[in-house]
Length: 320
Image (cartoon, rainbow, N blue to C red; front, side, top):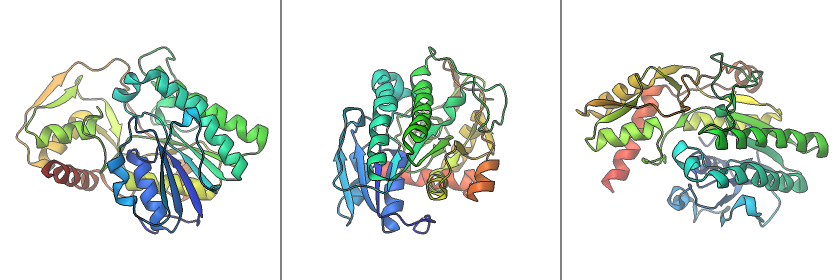
């Protein structure tokens, strides 16, 4: 990933930088010679995710809640705003924190970017589409969201963040971009975060039954984290405002995913079916026509290869 940048940045601030995707962004930027300030309150991010970066020249770690305000040592020329609980288990546990981060936290990050003359990228989500009435969907689709449903705190925090980012650009001329990230997986995911890939891997490696919700026919579009990082940085370098979908258009059913994880781990665990959570989307598939055409980006890591890499990382963690 050392050559992932098509534009050289001097100093990047990554909010939520100790999270799953954020920590990979921090490492990629450092590898490219960019100084990085990682800002995280560790409500869901983990210090060990960036522990290998702490002694590297140019890396600074600041523990702060972006919704309460934060300062950095020197102005950035790139600000990647990823701070937010992202898994259902986290944002259902931290509903008000999720809303504060998506609203006040986004405003604080935008204000810093504006003062610094920095390029600002909001990491939004496919969840802004809610329960889409078309699939795959592109960025022109406005969504079908229940603001008072069980996932509403996350969906609406991100939708508000997109509106705020757009308003900041229109009112103040801030250089902004919006990326809508679809399901991303890879090393440094938390085994207990409730999402399908880490849950299935954890269960398979520990000899537990793999729990598939509903009938397992709901689909996911899984993008390996290295590809997601390339997409985010491509959008930053391009200068487009977006939004732009960043995800893998190759769909897989949840049942097929469970069987694939079982096969790749060599697990003999059975598959058990459980009640499907309320609000669980039936399909999450991006249309990446814009990402391909404008950014020259598309996923490169196929699902089996990405799962093998992720499983190996989980094996190493469990061995420790």
